[in-house]
Image (cartoon, rainbow, N blue to C red; front, top):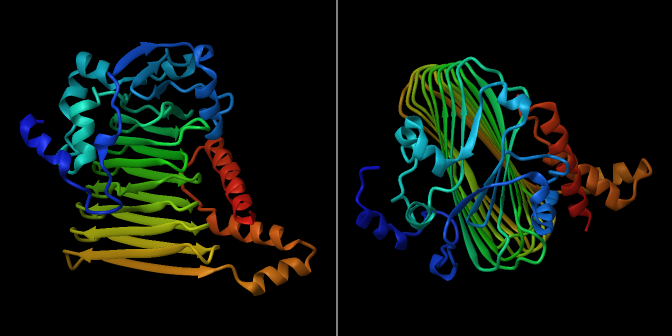
Length: 405
């Protein structure tokens, strides 16, 4: 970035255009540090946090605990592909690519959260590079854990999938049980090169007093493909995320989110896809479930700027609690007569007729409700590796049990 530090500091008081505004100065930012580790050396609280994500027995290549980045040598099989997974701070010191692309897609002046990450994050976060013409057939796991009270965790992640390659990244974000207050800010920049394919799964497992602010941007070159999948299924204080994907000629994007509103949390979630090149296509799919006293705002936008481009939005919400609320904002905008865009949105409740039918088949009311919720929340995300699909299915099963409570 060639922007002066003073200009970025001004953005520390700039709220996001969406979501709940908070005072970031309330949270302590520790001195960033980087350490190597072995999986067996992780303390019990971090193990418990990763277990909440369903990461039992999974060895991430990168873990960030508060403001400490822990990384290890890659599994032998992953090293064989020539994949790089290191803390971004180290990548910026050692590689021209990281220096060239970091902060190109996300402007640190966007709001107080991006400015805070730029000024005080110390460039912690992961840097992943996949070399050209490589199909990585095992997921690359990373994990971000907020362990201490009233701390701000700041992460800046950069992923670059080179020409003709294919990879899947799974990131889990969580807190151990007992953490009551905190702030997580995650800046992520994805570069998908010509003819490459990246699928990214983000799984959130927070606690009722945590504020979460992901900031994600994706750039997909000609003929590339990006699939993003977000799941949030634990209580939190507030979350605001709105990833933006830019597609060049014949590029594709599919953005799916499964959001479960719990407690009294504020959830402002969505995605935007910009069809920049001819023949580009994008789809935004969201499933929102309103429980307890949660407030959910589901946003989606597709902008068609090129001929022969296509886009579709599907926003569906299910209210389980009479004290919850769901608001949907699907938006389509065409700037080229050759762009074809469409959207559908619906919010409803569990049908009494469906419940009675299932109960007539021998299910209890709670079991019937769980079956309906499970069917509603299940999204067929294209291209997920089977191991990740099974992981997601287990989480959807957990979600359906929450609805019974």
